Length: 492
Image (cartoon, rainbow, N blue to C red; front, side):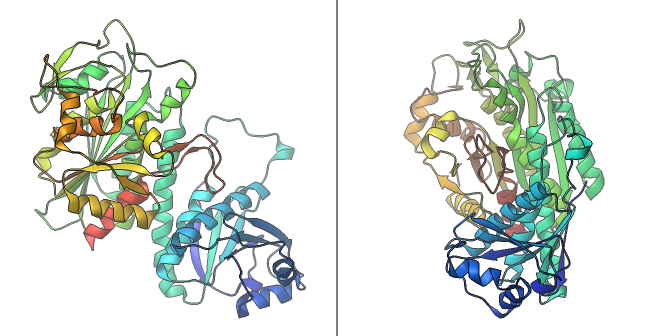
């Protein structure tokens, strides 16, 4: 069921909703609108603040019973003491919607004193994200234990005409994030390369885009020897998925978004440890991010040319699988020695990055759950950011800050290329443990010499192994927000 977000002119004390969510910062006092809510609640809001039962800390929540009229229940959600208020509102809205869903509220009303366009959009993104729950491969609970599904949210504002478009934008971005999360959460036997291709066709149909899908035979004709080396161990047909959003001026150079789509990664002959391998269904989060972003870009009808490219396959051990020591020729013509078959994502991406040259792109940004080394370096808070053009890197970092998809730049000094040199070929596909995220990015850089390029290593940020409060355990939707904010910046 689609979740709906609208902006409506109204005051929080008269909101006719099962649940009213109030976003409050640390040290909050009663504004006139909040004083009216307090009056409707018989003074319980002011008492909760005065007695420090609710302090407004980030992610803090407190339920209050509703009054005789207006909302049936009130949920206070803390903003903390935010440096970035829009980011705090987005997070609080997600917390609130998750709580609403758990209580069985079919609809909710949201109110915050800050009602700028950015604040309304952020709230709509957060509410949409918080409404999502993965249920596809889970049985429904018994009839007597089922709760109503959260279907809609109203953002209460003083200027409905102005806020409505901001709410629609936020809902579109949140829906793109949720699409990425849904795709990422699906198991590898369902979310196959063909499933991703089918999803891309559906996005194209809904938004008037052009979709093209290359299979094994087409990639053989393109001489994508590196991509096909990864795919030779699986019976599933690999897919190079192309989505074209052509709403910009005719002839203007497009932005190209590239995603790694390993629907499952065993490591191949260099097989991974059995413990935790089930999480390797998340090795297609970069692809999911591209598809989610293209869905949002289409819904926003942005006046710009954007190409989405997804390289998708599975990395399996078999009698036909690539082996350590094999040498293959890439789409660009460079020869690659495969020294570790578990460094397969870069083998797929390098051919897709080479393929991107045909679009004469203004900028290329790829996203991939590429290296465990990036998780060691940056943990689960920031994505690794690498690039061959500093102005583009700065633009991407700014989009990350505005969207909440935080990134941190890591170096690509020329000396790091020594890590991927080999006597058997032009380059090898891994440089060892030291500077592992950097050597992987250096490998990709070899295929991006003709255009500005940025690489996002999202291995630590694309999914969470714990419930983060504002987002459930599992896929996060990163980097849909970054992609969309970058493209919006270029469009305007």
